[in-house]
Length: 264
Ligand SMILES: Nc1ncnc2c1ncn2[C@@H]1O[C@H](COP(=O)(O)OP(=O)(O)OP(=O)(O)O)[C@@H](O)[C@H]1O
Ligand SMILES: [Mg+2]
Image (cartoon, rainbow, N blue to C red):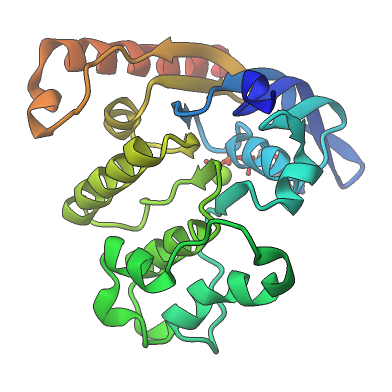
């Protein structure tokens, strides 16, 4: 029954922060659905509320108004059932634990609630994200990109139905970024998760997504939702197609329009 409302549903969500007595409207009347098996990217200028939106869906920030359901349930219930995976904008690894110990930690903390749950092998996940040789190192011995990949692996241990990723590849070089994109798409296609993926890269958003949500700032809101009808699997050759270039031009134009409106 939950499947009918599976995935993520965000309805009329608003959220303001109060800083020095002033309200900062981080999200204003945001509505968005992500179906199971759908990959949706969120793009927009710094400060437009992308991370705040992800945190509201993850249950880390309470909205002032509006309603969010995850897999047909409240965020709180879905989160308690470990249906939501989050890769935060900064990796937040514990410095005194090795990479493997960091990735294994969520399983240890939740030991009693894990029976009957699909769990993934932390070592396999680390291999998948290219950290097989680094699993016994400590976070400070890794590059920023490797720490990011460890945080991605950690988010997958409960095999969550909903994956929320906040610029997970931002610290990776171009080569590794391409590899990790492919690994993520492979993984997503074989697991049919609902993915909400924040990025600043227009080509990355197009390459990965079924739809792209373009946000605007002041107040943070959805400016446009753009379909990406490119066939899958998408490969290196996809970048060179006219369809890809047309879409890229379109997304950039929508982003530019929003910036211009903001500066008038
Ligand atoms: N905990 C907080 N307290 C006060 N203000 C906050 C808090 N979190 C976010 N904000 C403000 O809310 C707005 C949206 O922030 P958010 O982090 O969601 O932006 P973002 O789109 O993720 O930006 P970036 O691309 O730089 O990561 C900004 O104006 C930010 O300063
Ligand atoms: Mg952010």
